[in-house]
Length: 228
Image (tube, rainbow, N blue to C red; front, side, top):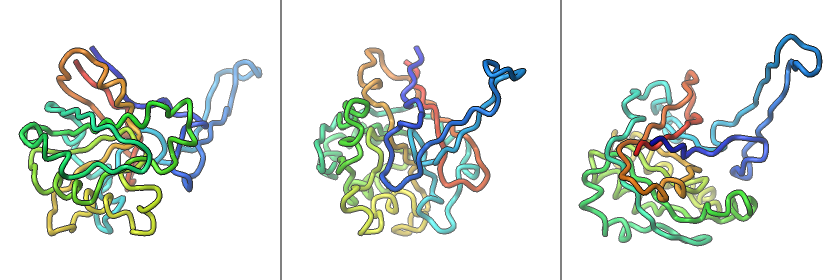
């Protein structure tokens, strides 16, 4: 069974407050008498379900195009439910309770439940949402060589309140290719519909998250699909 766990993009998609808006334009329309219908979009790469590559927070980091396609395909997914409310933080200690499972995982999907009201309360969804602690990010990056990526049901791994003034330390810990002298980074998927993932009854066999490859881009929209 295939289950899409990316959100559908639209001009109403919730976004980081300072990101540009999505824009959809009809260029030609059959209903207006044109021979065909064509359209264009203006899309900000960090709106909607997307992947952050190292270049997002590493000066000389790899772009989405530089990453091997195998890095976007996962055969040992681990889905953890760690319920969080507004402003709460996923800690290293909470992750340590699942260390044996983490040792086998190539992608960690962290479901906080905060996105359950993404559509019904979009303003609250982008306001002081839960985040990952720097210590938890370091623990995941340095402790599990099989792990390739993290996916979350929130729009940013850094706090909307504390992240910007601190220079987005969680992003840097996961993506900066020189952080702690550790070249191996973790890809980061944000704004993922993990509620659909945890509701799947069968074991998840694989997750595909292939990006749109735009030359030199630091991020990309993805259509994430779980295979069960």
